[in-house]
Length: 401
Image 1: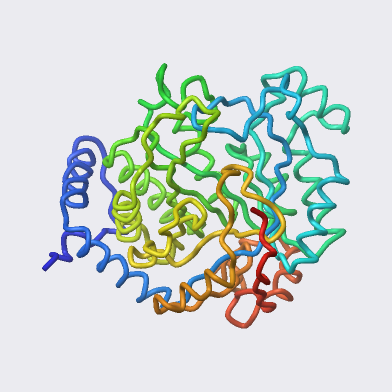
Image 2 (image 1 turned 45 degrees about the vertical axis):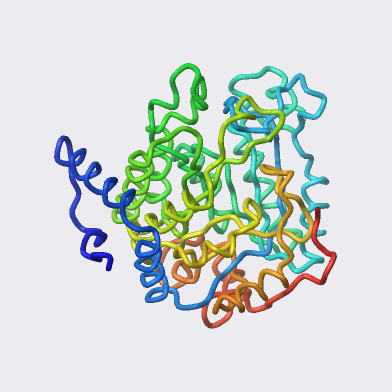
């Protein structure tokens, strides 16, 4: 029998210095050595108590606004050097074309994903942005969000990486939610030969600052861990605790993603081992136990054929799934068919429901997490429970392979 008191997380008391290091070491040992089945049972009980037996997802269209980036992470296949013929910044017409395809297929979310600040590193990126009339990528992004709001019924969600206070304030009126994967807080992984070497936006301090700024600006925020890139289990726990501490201060973390590294043929880490299913299950369960129960826990369904097993480890959300666009970050992994995912969830004892890009908790009157210009629009799209009022399911064959 698993001693559940070993996994009761104090959501009110912080630690520092040697005491914090000792606490992390103790917690790491407990989570790493605990029988997996008992760990998952504890995590599932927390999920069931707070979220019940409903699993959610967001029906989205994916807009890769630019695939240029000043970072060169050794696991990334999305980024293209400006000299690559495939490097680009999408035009407003291209953005709207994708948005309208999503709208036709019942999408509620337009996910803007883009490389981080390429104009600060590359002259070609600066010139391409200047041709569109901008000096800063985040200003162009803000205008594209505003264009989507004006021309379509979709709600923008922004994944723009590290952001300053000014950038958050620029984007906030036009984005229903935002996100940035923390990935890891390991400074060791920024050293030469490691995946975040010479990546200024992957310095942990910069990403932690963005988490804090998002909270201070009352932005409903998504973050998460990328596991299997060389971090230790202790470093995963430290990252989860850092996320949770930020949420305790500001109440702004709406969801945490546990994402597994995937090998790709054209990356520096093409031969790096992937985390196995047991590693994913243990990390998911650990996250559910460490994080405040009101933070949604998500794992991507397209990055493992055995994703249904994640339900038993405590997830309550599948994230964004698109009927019109591929996963541009992991293009070799097709989205699951939503009707099939719904059936699999039912077989596992759960109900699949569509949510909006911003979670119900953040829609409550007086929460302050939506700009006035977006509040009425989101309210009109939400059911009395705060989920999508218009629940859609994909027809067989609609999905992009």
